[in-house]
Amino acid sequence: MSPGCRLTYERRNVDDGSVKWTHVLSVDSVDGGRVLYSSTFRDNRGKVMYSGPLHLQAECGSNGDVSVDLARSVAAVFLNYLPDRMVEWKPFLSVLPSAMVPGDSLPDADFTVRVAGLGFRVRVDSRTVLRTETLTTPAGEFDCIVVREHKTEKGLGRNRVTTALTWYSRGTGMVRHDTYDNRMELETSEVLTGIEME
Image (cartoon, rainbow, N blue to C red; front, side):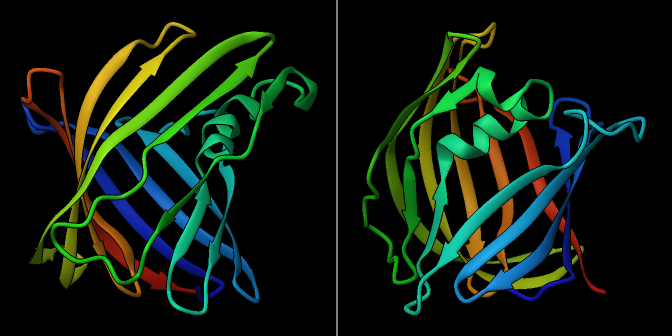
């Protein structure tokens, strides 16, 4: 929640170890519990993806819970290419509780973003807190809690079923994110590689 903080991630394809993208999350401003941030993705040649940064927002409660509008996060990609009037969605807030413990189940998410009238539906279910784990990355060592979730995406040329494991650390956020295909074979792994303050 510190303005000017930059978290850098690197996502690699597991089959050959090649870089899929780098991702820089920059905290732009903080107003009470509202955090405005941007995510910039670059492909393996260093070219900016999605036509520029994605402008996003999170709400941080006084108890440490973090809420994100998942529908707005998906819409942000389309808003970089199209006029606002062509992208429609209803807010869908997803809360990541601060007090998660292994064995907890988190609420499902189910939302649709419409682009020029065409629907893109995302469903996230089977969200389970698996375990705690200490994880070492190029950015340092982090005490994490590991969450597993199943995602189905349908529409706009992207029909995909995946399972993800995500490592979260209090005070930092996401530290690692592994994506498995529908056969539960590991496809990609994204890891925190650096933390900088301006």
